[in-house]
Length: 324
Image (cartoon, rainbow, N blue to C red; front, side, top):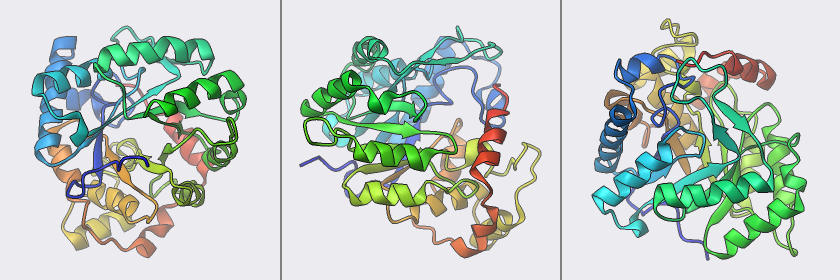
């Protein structure tokens, strides 16, 4: 039987390191959040401080990826320095993208996607070395139907082998066809069994289209992790464009509950019965503090339903976000 993702008393929030392991990311206001000092040692110290704050708040799920700059390295160093019992926390990582920005926020290309067996065979030992241990969750990074990874028998066999070694393998999804990709993954078989046991998907009030497929994954016994619950900052006090233009229904619900908009957005994700964990993508202690109001909130989902738009429009807008 697969071990539970969280201790019974832990909040159903985890900390994602996409915005912490590198100087540039697409979250609104990211460059300002990290400040002027963005050298490797600066961001290592900042990431460790965020991990300490998350740990002290009870968070026990920490998510990284090979393409998140030095996120795995920072997380692994923190784990070794703090000496936390591996049995008390869950570490997730992902393979399939390579970080190529050379520690520049203004790089023309930040990540290169390749879901080949060669990339998997290269990145798995890199992840082991950076973390100093095997991850508990190991996901194909942004699997899509177009890359063919879900039809690659050699990749699937390698992942199935990792699954027999106690790693919970799965996929993360992105783009307007998340639901189709996830249903294809649910149907994958290696030696008569599905090798996947986890999915990390974008679900938020602006883009909830994967919800039904995620419910199917949960019913099949998969671990379901929600990423981008605040839509890269667009469901925070910064608003849809960074200018504070918070959508009226979200602002009203935040006012009613006496919390910030991001807490409402994350609470909406946590109210979905198929969600195991929602990731906070906080870059600062203040953002993490606000996010931590989400567990236990009861938001009016019907009042927020009008925020939903078309998946195609959402992903076009996301792709236009600037790296800062």
